[in-house]
Image 1 (cartoon, rainbow, N blue to C red):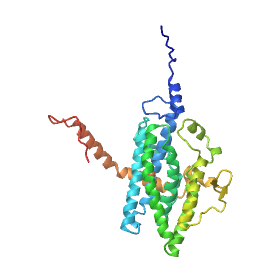
Image 2: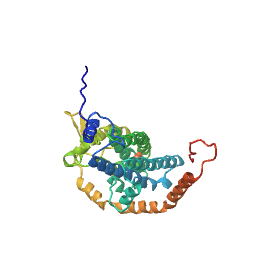
Image 3: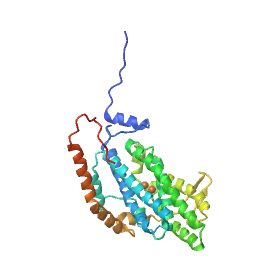
Amino acid sequence: MTTTTEAPPRDDQQVFDALIEADSRVEPRDWMPDAYRRTLVRQISQHAHSEIIGMQPEANWITRAPSLKRKAILIAKVQDEGGHGLYLYSAAQTLGASREDMLDQLHAGKARYSSIFNYPARTWADMGAIGWLVDGAAICNQVALCRTSYGPYARAMVRICKEESFHQRQGFEILLALSRGTEEQHQMAQDAVDRWYRPALMMFGPPDAESPNSRQSMAWKIKRVSNDELRRRFVGMCVPQFEALGLTMPDPELRFDEETGQWEPGPIDWDEFHEILAGRGPLNAERMRRRRAAHDEGAWVRDAAAAYARKQTERPAPAGASNHKEVAA
Ligand SMILES: [Fe+2]
Ligand SMILES: [Fe+2]
């Protein structure tokens, strides 16, 4: 006679906890706590908004790029950012969020996007500084998110990171060319990194001690690395690259901590960060105005795409046709 000892059935919460504990991925059809779902929708949609608003400072420079090659590279980069928005809105949709609602929230000024995109891009060197520092900071954040617990978000990040590393290199290369150019060009590069370095450090969010939501996000393994640690990693990455560029790091209080083996940035002006988050940055109103206009101007494209999709589903399949639908190029 054999005896089987059956484990008692586990409830949804226990199954979810075990998934997180085992470092597995939560997938759209899995049960998940409401607060986990809400946190993800908020984070992923904010991230998507940042990608599409982030197209603006660089798009404004496409016609002024100094050569055909630079224009082509910048167009490709801006287009990538639109694609990143698309992957991320799609990932949020797998959680039940509707794309229309997410965009309505953005256009109504109720949703946030990264505060960095409310700063102006004044010179061509800003294209270098944005690519190198802003996309560089995004990479630090996003590499950690490749291991986030929600499957569709993590997979979107893997693809996005590959493209971000191209963005960062093109930015570095722009700055390198300027830094090695005339005295005036070198100064233009230094001025651009002077203006973008601090805002890039703020992209990692407030210090850990003042980041109340971080603890829960870490427990759910949505967030894998803390704000301060990510910021230190970014600074550590910048130190040798500033040197290679022949530019000065705009942080006189930067110091190397012998104990941790990491670079520690000087104090950051968080008042400025909060002002911009509250909508009082140099370009908040302009970015939102342009975004709403772009959405309105694109209405006919969305209508045409929807009409085309409807036509495809209504059209009867020709006799003998396979089940495979033709995909329009
Ligand atoms: Fe991006
Ligand atoms: Fe990028």
